[in-house]
Image (cartoon, rainbow, N blue to C red):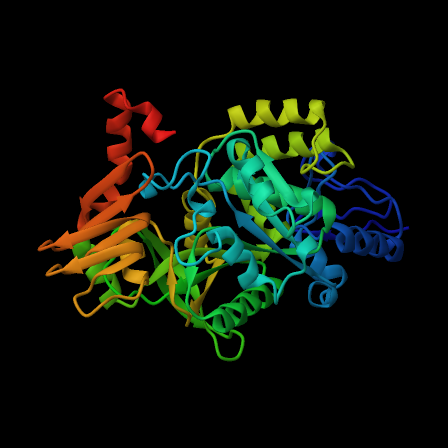
Length: 449
């Protein structure tokens, strides 16, 4: 027999021989003839659907996209996928003191109706997701009150509890690891638990479009909102090239992100066409884990050890051994947001897409945001509960029980609770978080619990 054909001076591998490349422990060797090898790759990809060529030290298998295209180029578009919603409910909402406390975080507050913010969030997405397809990720401190609040809405197995809060990158990584075990073809739609949406129908259309885009492209998808004013507490998305998106929705490649700019910079960003970063995302679990491995290898490594400890069990129902591993690995993970850790880096490489939303949105980040969302009287005053504004303008009152009367004041926030009263200028509502720290320093810790 003649020698096998070579490419650039390197002898090609004959069937049954090992390929050149990374260490053997990191590669998959198929000692089968071509047809069987292709069937084997197709079977593996139909189960896992990953993007990189390495064998992790867990049950996650990641295959190169080049192998996918070579062996079965239509596989990605024809495989069945299932959509899941992941609700992040780990925030403390300190800026909503004195109403918000550690055992009553922002997502459990009733601000705009008689329903908590997280209940409103779940009701908003119910037309798109079945109950078993809605997962809630929360911190250990909040798990009991959240389970109690949602006991008649979601099954117990749909609560993923972090042993400690390490920001959004570990939070979403843990959810992705759980979904990879439940459904390797999953598309993961990410939503904060405590946002306000004005147009539910438009919101659902946009989420559906985002999931469709995430299913078509190996990219992360974020939702941008047209700014109504130069907000300094939001992140901004820099639009890149326009792409072919779903009908009725504008779609762009993301050029970059700008986090919490000054008012002057925010005005300049708005003039250039930038959008608010809503913190609402959609992506394939496989795509997300691949990028997480690339940009945050320490987080990915911890997740792999957690998943290996889980075995065939669910991370949402940890036994004592798995719980110990979770606690150990979370202490090792960095405290980093998904925006800084993954999205900004992936966006610089053109791996993030954005859909421009047409629904009203707010992250309800402070009492000032509540003032903007609530209906107002002719003098610009808004309130919840018992209140009267006399010769006063642009104020917010939250007092469900006691009467609050305003006389001759402008631009003030008044929040009355059973054990504390807040009075502050609306424009300084973001500083409530600092005020809570000052109360602790002054020895008034019991008013912050």
